[in-house]
Amino acid sequence: MSQDESLPPGSSLYEHGVTEVAASERTSVTVAACPVCGSDEATPRFEIEGVPQRMVVCTKCGLGRLHPMPDAETVRHYYPNEYYGEPGIKFQSLVERLVRIVGARHISFLSGGLRGRARVLDVGCGRGVILGALADRGFEVHGVEVSEGAARGADPRAEIRIAPTLADAGYPDAFFDQVIIWHVFEHLEDPRATLASIHRILKPGGRFIIAVPNFSSRQARLTGPAWFHLDLPRHLYQFPLAALNDLLRQTGFAPESVHHFSLRQNPFGWVQSALNLWTRLPRNALYTLLHHRAPGAQPPYEAATRRWLWFWLVVGTPIGLGLTLLETAFRNGATVHVVARRSSAASPL
View 1 (spheres, helix red, strand yellow):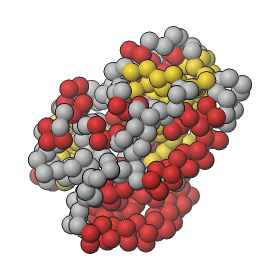
View 2 (tube, rainbow, N blue to C red; view 1 turned 180 degrees about the vertical axis):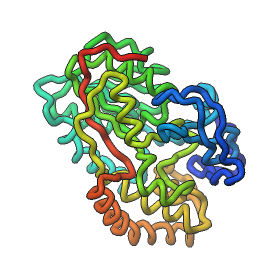
View 3 (cartoon, rainbow, N blue to C red; view 1 turned 135 degrees about the horizontal axis):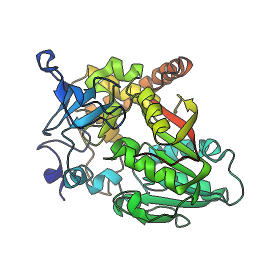
View 4 (cartoon, helix red, strand yellow; view 1 turned 180 degrees about the horizontal axis):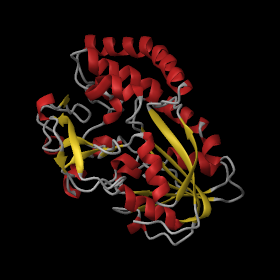
């Protein structure tokens, strides 16, 4: 699948333009039942360049989602090979090292309370950054991915299965001590079915850690269509924290703690969202610039634009970090991760 076939003409991977739906068109529409609250009423919020779907917001619980939901083949086109990068590498070398350092730092959090050869599953494991660090600590690590390309370069100690859904991966009941789904849940077509599968394969009392962008955050509200973490149309859902917790409880999980600080996600979200909002540069231009390029490939943008973007990365990151600390103090992180336990009760679909 070429880039031209999967993206709007003249657009790169992260440059889908997003605009507010005109106020005159923000009238309630009938949609498929909300997977959180069951309501069939939503309000159009965002339009996406080159994509027929709009993002609508549930009038009852505030869940955002694409409407109508694209089919599986269409969704597949949103993930060309360049989305995953070269085997084992997604960003330029310095950025890739920093990503892995930050990833390794939060392994202490992910592994806290696990004992011995605990069995851990990472849903949407990608390049296996998390799994490799967990394997270093002696855990038995497993991953599931929808694409072989996504898992290229993953740690060979991880047992990775390729399957279109978690249910299709074929794991036995009560198999895992912990399941992680780290910034993947918002990409999945059927969140309730995914949680039912996780509930089934977790041992009773097993731990579930889920990270998502927080659609109810101040960063999301202030930057609107410019919000970096929207990532439309790949993010099929936008979860407010309250709606996510409701869905977890409905599917047999007991949330134990919510964490609002993410060094990897939240400061950069402020920087890129501000650039999207206040400049005429292509959407997510800084994020595009930071990605790994094949040897000999031309860098994106003119030299002056690249210098401008690097300048704002250096200047904006401390500001973004300060705003991140502030939003953490007010428990309103731009991305959040929730730690929950599997109850002994069956998970309702």
